[in-house]
Image (cartoon, rainbow, N blue to C red):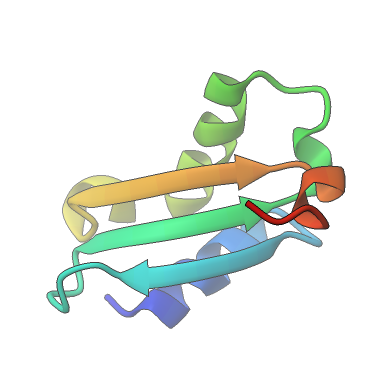
Length: 81
């Protein structure tokens, strides 16, 4: 799987999300993703991660073996680390 495909799946599932995906090992199965989405505003961190996992469906267990995930609300997205 490509980082672009992972990004597309997340953006498709979380309309309006800003997503950045990196292939951590160049193997197409270990990724890092930063997801900023206004819909995270009222969610706990666990709920935010579950929302992202839901967008990836069965890819998460079949093609994606690891996903390092950082979520942010729309307000957080304007802030830098």
